[in-house]
Amino acid sequence: MHQPIPGARFVDPTVLARIGNLEMVAKMVVDGLINGTHRSPFFGASVDFAEHRGYVAGDDIRRVDWRVYARTDKFYIKEFEADSNANFAVLLDISKSMGFGEKISKLDYAKTLAACLTYLANQQRDRVGLVTFDEQVVDHVPPSAKHMDVVLHTLDRARAEKPGHLVAPLKRLAEHFGRRGIIVVISDFYAEPEEIFDAVGLLRFRGNDVVLFHVLDPQEVDFAFVEPSSFEDIESGEQIPIVPSALADQYRALVAAHIEALTTRASQQQIDYMLLNTSQPLDYALFRFLSMRERMSRTR
Image 1 (cartoon, rainbow, N blue to C red):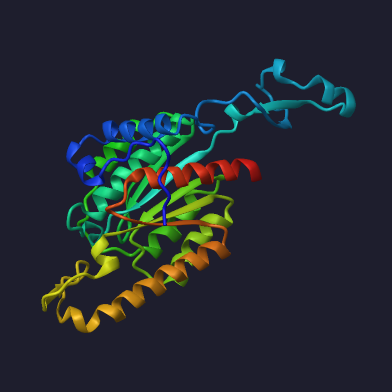
Image 2 (image 1 turned 120 degrees about the horizontal axis):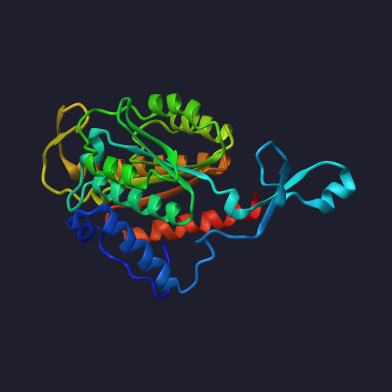
């Protein structure tokens, strides 16, 4: 059960989706969260000392630590937190199944979440990037301090039009994220847990901090359908006649088992995992992300 964040301003994601301006929405949600919590240790370029690194040609000689030089006879540069900001990238699933939703589609919710997260990271002075994918990579915006506008534009035009293949694109993307950074994957994760973590494990293996946001519509979790009817597989278009009352308990058990498997595998591989349904305010996801960033900063 998620606990409310004292003073934070929660906004119905359905209302946010109607605004239509991702930049405005991201600013509203992030600023509302930060102002509501009254204190943020996560924002702004810090000038706290972080670590030393070896001097290379072109470095500002004023940043040489002469005390260390006196002890070691070697030149070392003082690095500060502001110098060690991360690459931050969102990998967004835009396969056809993400188009499902009663009040708001999973994709619209995910796009808004992605906009908020990249805005948050950009405020942190991280280099932000974005990848959208279905059965293959659709758009790739490499992390950069200057790419916030490009990220928002790419999110705005993303559509859930083709069947997806979650695992293959993630495996192909691993080679593009060899430099340590933060990678957020947003998807409905319709694949076998073992295959999912084989793919995201490659990103983790390369030194990245990986966060999974599992986005589902409430109907996918609760299966509150009553009337017998034909259900359509969004990915394949196949129609299947179903009597909901006969399958509801089995369906819920399968969903619960899938979520439990994802949770367990994520914990085993030191990957942050969060289940969201599209009725939940985005503030919860952002607060969880901020908490994760604080924990990472203590353990690095």
